[in-house]
Amino acid sequence: MKPTTRGTLAAVVAGVAAAVGAATATPAAAIGVVPVPVPLGGAETALGTELPRVGGQLPVPTAGGPQGPRFTEGRLVPDSAVPRLPVDAGLPGLDATAPLEHVLGDGFDHVGVDAPASDLRALSPGLSLGAPLTAPRPGQAGLPDLTRPELGVLAPVLRASPGADLVAGPGPR
Image 1 (cartoon, one colour):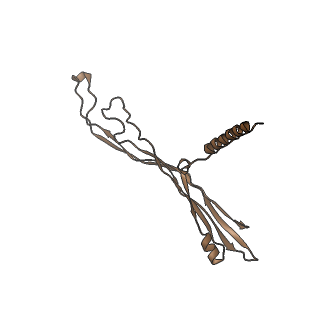
Image 2: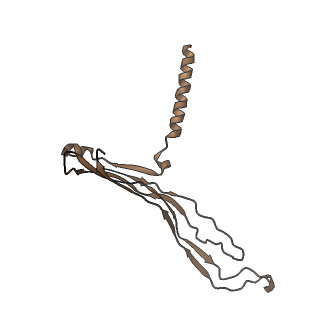
Image 3: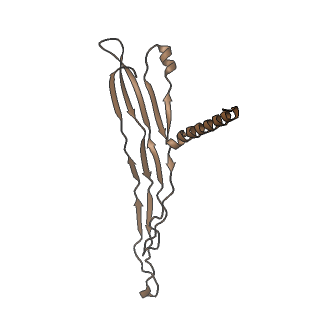
């Protein structure tokens, strides 16, 4: 094989590898959580003992677009006077492992908790308003009737499904 062909083949393989690596790597904002490690390695070395390992995840909230007005037949004002705003975020996560002295011999037992960040979907409160007039009526020369004004508060919606695992036992972390 000529050196030119080898160089071209190496460049193509390197380009494909870079494209595959870029496609599989995702930035932290695209994932939705930012990992937060708690560095205790220096204190562990200085104290000469095994310290707990703690880390967590903080969610990155993202706001969606507000729901548009919905017109209903027979009403003068749209259904949602103040639209509701959807917000997608998450509950923070925790990953902690702590050593426990082994009562019967040398070594450590460990206890740990793993509560991964979970999705949280929210919908902000909204306002629904009804006008004090009805739609124009053809039988009354196009004049509207008077009605009682209506005001409604659309309650916020909150959905989440958090979970956690508690682990205890011997062995390294």
